[in-house]
Amino acid sequence: MKVQMEMVFTFEITTVPEHKELRYYWAHLEGSLAISVDNILFFEESDICLIELANDMHNWLLSDKLNTQPDFIYKTVDYYPEPILIFEYINYDFYKIESIWQKTELTHFVPKNSIITAFETFLKNLEKELAQTLTIDLNELLRDLNQVGDT
Image (cartoon, rainbow, N blue to C red; front, side):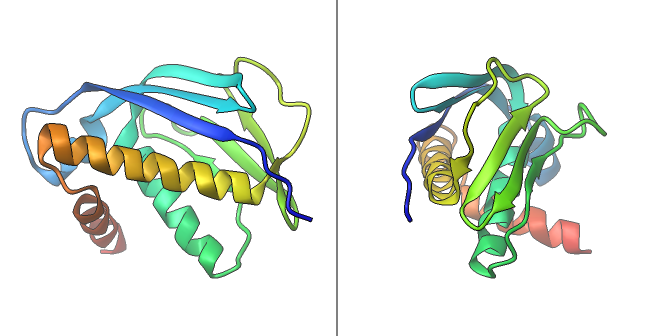
């Protein structure tokens, strides 16, 4: 049974590194981030490392295509070891969503298809924003970042 909920990630870039090197963009391109589920504000925070989040989302989407059904855990070097976002796999199509900074507790599980749609939309919107305002290719940045991580 396919259940659809609307999960939306909205962001605004607030801090852009002065240097165009990979390590600066990965660690220092920051912004505000809000997550809503069915028009209920779940999460809102400023100073989120958007490239780090995008990389984790990208890698989770790739692992989902391999049908490994992993949890999505977003940690950042700024707040390590505490995860900021946890999407815990519950069963075939549903995840429990939690955050150390959540604004409200979700009383229901979120369907995987809603998470996939939200992640893909966030990545497309970030890609568009980076290309238009900073002439940065998000896909190239993620590819380079993952190559660095593999070494």
